[in-house]
Structure formats: structure tokens, C-alpha cells
Length: 110
Image 1 (cartoon, rainbow, N blue to C red):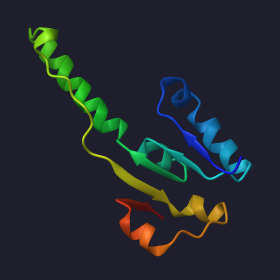
Image 2 (cartoon, rainbow, N blue to C red; image 1 turned 90 degrees about the horizontal axis):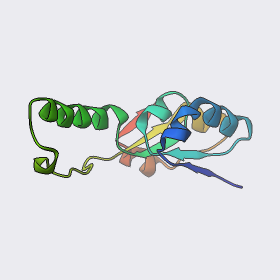
Image 3 (cartoon, rainbow, N blue to C red; image 1 turned 90 degrees about the vertical axis):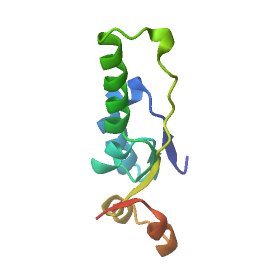
């Protein structure tokens, strides 16, 4: 295996720190779907934010608690995605990322 792509699932999120630590131990570049996993040591993520998704869920629950019918709530999908790169992790893995790739990132953690 040359790299790892970690899906955003509840089961994998539960073991996120083990996954990040093992990817580092075995020097596997790993990409995640959530920015928050890059902030704690993952290499890079392209996807949404757990915080942003949670806010949308809270807004929907608020509407339900105020009496809205579930059938009346619109189906929502994520529309904002970000590329986040952790340069400390890249350096620890011995990776040199192209400057253009870094320039295109929405956030670079140094």
C-alpha cells in the first residue's frame, strides 16, 4: 500500500487518532474528508468541516423542535469543500509538495 484514503464514517471517526498515528508510523500519506483530522496530524483533507455539518444539523433540529414537519424540511447537501494540508506531517513523511498545490489549498497548517 502506498497511500491511504480515510472515509468520513462514524466508525472510522471513533478510531481517528489510531488511524493518524499508524499512518505516521508506517509513513503512509493519508487523505481524509474532514479538516479536523488534518488539524490533529493527518496529511491532507478535501471535504467539508465537521463543525459546519454539525451547525446544519442543529439548524434542522431547531426547526423540528419548533414544530416543523419533517416532510416540510428541505433535503440539504454540502456545498462548501476545502483542501487542507498539514506541512508538518508532509515533512515528517519526507514529502515535498509542489508549490502550486500548496497555493491552491484553502488552508495550509504549518
